[in-house]
Image 1: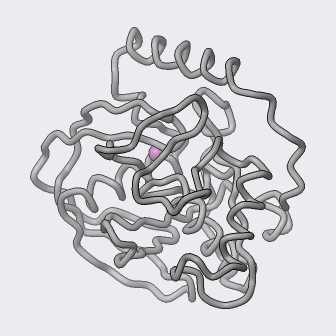
Image 2: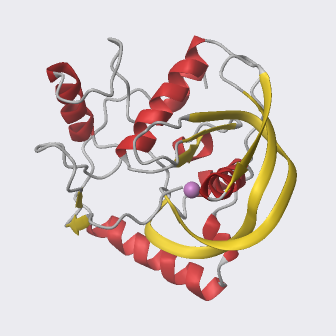
Amino acid sequence: MSRRVSGGRRSGNVRVWPWAPKGTERRGFGESEKARNLTDIMMSNELPFWQGSTPMALLDILEFPDPRLRTRAVPITTFDAALSRLIDDMFETMYAAPGIGLAASQVDVHRQLIVMDCSNDRSDPLVFINPEILARENVGVMEEGCLSVPGIFDEVERAQRVRVRAKDRDGKVFECELDGIRAVCLQHEMDHLDGKLFVDYLSTLKRDRIRKKLEKERRDRPAKPTSDEVPAGAALGR
Ligand code: NI
């Protein structure tokens, strides 16, 4: 999920954020140029949030109306280093986008895995594997956006408080209560695991208009260079 951020401006295909250090403008998703830029930044120690020495990969995010986004994700049964690596790459991809939630379905890995961080300072990273909602209450409306439906925001009605059971990256079961944006974000991401998008809650007319707008924007984008990144699923032996 993404949220509207005031202050960001769109300049051609480059989204410029006022707090991004010079030279780190985020370009279109999954371009190898961006991956190189981020590697340069990481090696130069300009940004403090990377730890460890393994370079992380930015994954390509599928965009509406890509039919792969309609795939139903299957539960995860193996909790190993490849899963851990995928989780780390999904966090990097989500933070770079920038977004507050990402489901594995969006990076073409159809397993029940969600990463989220609804804080403003990357202080609340959450991982949900094979999540189930045990209880919902306080239905309300909140504006949502989605990294797979870039630049589109609209209101969706959902429970504003949920109780969830899931597994963590080590396979340990936990339960927690989420409210406000975190509750909404989790439900938005769980929809992705079912092959559902937030635009499905809008009218057919609106959804059609959004599809046409995004298809036009994609046509107008400069051709994508051949990516030398490892596909997201490779680590899981897909
Ligand atoms: Ni989304």
